[in-house]
Length: 125
Image 1: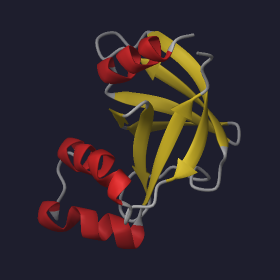
Image 2: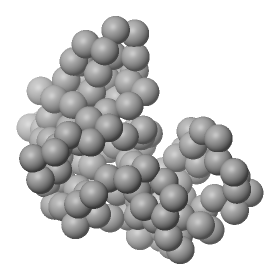
Image 3: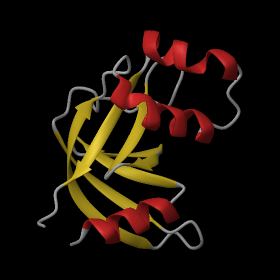
Image 4: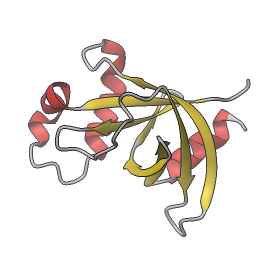
């Protein structure tokens, strides 16, 4: 499976399914620099066990009809939100966050209360 196929699926999917500890969890996400990024905790989507996981399975489905586009294994890692390298993913996540009641303070709240997780697909080059 190619990274290009996964990227295309991620850009076409509104939500994805993350399998953590045998449970399938729906999550909104963004694609940035070769990986899926999600936010969990602190008033955001509840994704129990994801921040502690090192490996997960991800399933992308079509926005149009819900058909499975692609399923892949990924390495999960918590993003250091204070790192300059996280700025791009954080900006995209904030832009895609619908109905945030505290939009101006969103990134501050995430830094204090939430985890941003990077899901890097396992692909052979």
